[in-house]
Structure formats: C-alpha cells, structure tokens
Image 1 (cartoon, rainbow, N blue to C red):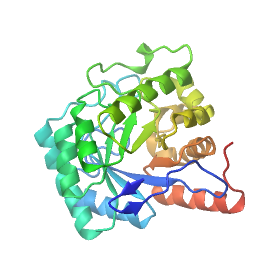
Image 2 (cartoon, one colour):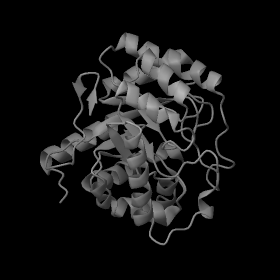
Image 3 (cartoon, rainbow, N blue to C red):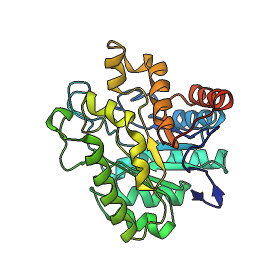
Image 4 (tube, one colour):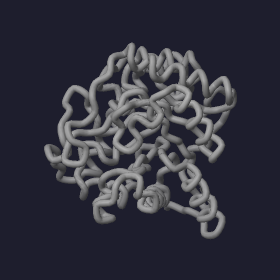
Length: 291
C-alpha cells in the first residue's frame, strides 16, 4: 500500500513474513472489549501513541462501535450522529498526527463526511466495515484522496440482525463472492487500493468464524491484501470455555497466526506488543509460508 509516500508491504505472506499490525483505538462508550476506556481525547491519543511505540504499523481510530447484536453483545451498538462521531475522532487523529507526524492512521467509519474530515486531519486509510452499503459516496472520498480502502463482509447498518439469523451453505464461497462484488464496485468508483476483510464475528456464527479462518487462503483469489480482525472476539471465548474478552489474548494470537499462515497480511489487534513479539519470533524461527 502506498500511503502518503510511505510504502507498507501488504503482499502475500512468504517465509519470514511478519504481518502489518493495525492497533485499535476505540473512542466509544460501548465497544465490546474496551468501551469507555478511551472516550476522552487525551486518553485515546495516549493509547494510540502507546500502540505505535509497541510496534503498530497502523492505528485505527473509530468513533462508533460496530458491536453486533446477539447473545454475546445484547442489542448491539447504538447509532451515532455524524456530528458526534466527528467530535470523537477528529481531535484524536489530529493529536496523534501532531505527536507522531510519520504515523499511519486509519479512520474506522461508514460515513463519507467522517472519512473526508479524518483524511484532512491526518488519517490516510479508510476502514469501512459496511463496504459502501451505508453510503457508496465513501468510495468517492477514497478515490479523490487515493487512500487505501478497507471493506468488510457482514456489517450492514440498514439491517442490524444477530448472527443466528444468517445461514450459509458454504460461508467461505459466499463471503468470497460478496467481497469480489464489492471490490469491483469500489474500483468502478475509482478506488485504486482495496483491502478485503472477511468479517470475523459479523453475521456469522461460531462454526462459520472457525471455517473462515481454516480456509482463509481461499480469499487470496481476490488478489488484494487481506485483513483479519479476530482480536478478543466471542468465538474465542467460546473455545476457551467462556472467558471474558480481556482474557482472550493467547486465543487471539492463535487465531491470528492461523489467519496469517493462510494468507492474511494485515492483523487488527488490541494487544499490539504481544502480536509483534509473537510474529517476529515465529517468523524468525520457522517462517510463515502459504502456497
């Protein structure tokens, strides 16, 4: 990815590959794992800088939770107005950019207005979990700025439904086809740099999440960099016997290792230092290869 004249290598993993790490900064009161911890701008800025110091290649700033409805998270996240979302994220982006001018910042939003203002404030990547379903005008924002654009399967803000309502004959084939369609639409709108996220934990049940990771290398056929965000998610808690999000670090590392071994080149994580150490040591000792 070419980001403000800085090249981030998000190509297909080869032997000795260490993925790009995207650190999470949730400027929200209701995110499933750390809601409310970084709602104040100063706390969020401090956290973002700390993630950079821990080895984050990208810090992802979000002002609206995407917590899905269902047994694990209740009714899901609450809608946030454009004005409130801007008030949450812009001071944080500007603050991190001022302290760390070389930092690569992404804006986690589905709103074109927020994306545009974030790019002006210092962000360089748009992370749109709705993949343009909320408002396809976000593609025009990415195209004008030549900003890398991340699109994800599974979050449609117009149809907020629990995972139990979704059924797939073949979840990997379904998600791959859907992502291919959204990638094509984004490119038709002028977006040059696209990253795909299969959407672990969104509109999928426990078995579907596991299957997506087991067969993740099939998404390499999309011929775009692949991002995976499994950090602390509910399916890991289920595997581990019901432990809460803050006790899912080791399970998260295992899930992200499987993702990288199967083609992911960007990992979105809460615990950046642990992920950096894990992938650095693993790549040095044994190499990570996909074929």
